[in-house]
Each structure stands twice: as C-alpha cells, then as structure tokens.
Image 1 (cartoon, rainbow, N blue to C red):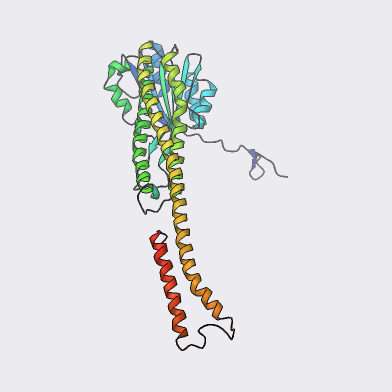
Image 2 (spheres, one colour; image 1 turned 30 degrees about the vertical axis):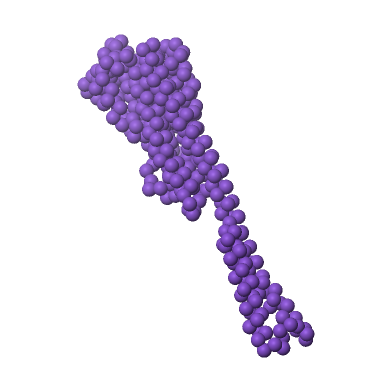
Length: 357
C-alpha cells in the first residue's frame, strides 16, 4: 500500500522527505547601510547586525533595499525588524494599489512605478508603458524599500543622498521622501514622452489622404489609461503625508512632501489631458473614416450609373423583337454605340463636375 509523504528504502523504514530549500535573504538585499548624523558608517552590514547595532547605540537608522523578495526572505527580514504580518503579505505580492498605511509606529507607502519603453513609432510598439511597484516601510530607526519589477529611477538614489548628509540627517523619513519624489518624477518623464506619441497620431489622423488606423489610437489610449490608474491613487497618500501629523514623518519632511504633491497634481492633470485628447482623436478618426466611406460609396455609385446606360440599352436590344429602331439600318450599330458613348461621357463629366469622381 502506498504511503503518502514517506519514502521507503529496502525495508529500512521510512526516510523523511527532503526539506524545502530557501533562497538566502542576502539574494534579495540590494544594499544595507547604517546612517548616523546623515553619514553612512563604513563597512558592510548584514541586516540583522545593522539594526541590532543601531538599537544598541540608540543613534542613526538602517536603510535596507530589497528586490523581489519571496515569502521566506520577507518573513526573515520582518522578524528582525519587527514588522506586521500584513506588511509581509503586501511586500511579497507586489500587486498593491498605491496607498499609505500605519501599523503602530510603522508607516507603509505603496507606489506604482512606471517606465517608458522606447520605440520607433506607435504602430510598431507592443508596449509603451511598463509598470511595477515600490514599497517604502518607515520605522523609528529604519527605512526599507521593496521593489518589484524594473525601475531604473531608483538607481543612484542612495549615492545621491549620501552626497547630501544634511538631508539624511533628518532621519529615515528623508529616504521615503526621496523615493516618492523620484517615483513622481518618473511619472512626469513618461507623460512627457507620451505627448510625442499623441502628437504623432494626431498628425497622422489630420494629414490629408492618410490611412487612419483607429486600433493604434485605442492601443495608445489603453497605455495612457494604465498610466492614469497607476498615478491617480497616489494623491490621497501624498495628501496625508503633507497634512496629517504622522509620528515617523517630522514636520520638515512634510514640507518636502508638499512639493512632491504639487508635481503629482501637475502630471495627473497632464495625463488626463492626454486621455481626453485621444478620446477626441477617436471621434475625429471615426468621422474621417465615415467621410472616406461616403466618398467611396459616391464614387462606386457614379460608376454604377455610368455602366447602367450601356447595360440597359444592350438589354433592350437583346430582347429579340422584330420591330426595333435601327435594326435594319446600315449604320444602326454605330448609332447605338455612339449614343452609349455620348451618354456615358456626359454622365462622367456631370459626376466629375459634382466631385463624385
């Protein structure tokens, strides 16, 4: 009889199934450093040793960056820093809506990241805006950034802040502000790039005798809607960071967040304008297609009318009546054919004058 969950070897009894191997936490750690008075301490620290050192000395804070941590890695880090289990769940999933949540003395800011994918033209692109997520976990003596997906906007941010110790001296909340500022700046950059794509489609739509592909407009509209859905929900978290007296965020940092909120408001309005502009382009493209179809139908109708004249005359003379005009005339054939040509030519000139042809 089969035994589930056991392995048997030559009657020697059951042997335990091999335990699941876990990827070390260090594989997910991008960098980890201790900052005291705005300056990074020399040496490399493992995250557990870093937070232990800070808490023993009662000075400074730890900044740890993680990239795509799995469940085991995130649980290990959470156990060291004392994070709530719901933070672990959100950090592992990587599919959170932009939001700001408070867990006792810990603040969690989720933000969507976006990246513009370079392409020759909209018609050749399969994707224009790619999205990811970055989570910032802010505590009294630490700040943790958890990134999902590709987002080059955070590259070099740590080095940039380390060159400005006066900012880091404000505490770990300064890192949260810097990350939020960089994310919102990426929104602005992507929106500026999309303006060129919208202008390209607009030029194509309103160029005379150009082929209008409505699918391209819908494709770009879908990409802009994705950007809009990533940007818009961040408004309320930024507003809370500027107005609410949240313990981990000092008053001076709240002033900096106001600037981030202003940039966010500006780019959200710009993206909304692009969306409305594309809606107008869809309407214009549909109208242009309708006009082109009407023009084609008029042209087809004109040629049908011209072709109907010889068809009608040929049909009449094909009825084989004995008494019909011109049947016995020596030049009857030439008279009938000439009459057909004159009528067709007259109709052609008439339709041409009315711009049907």
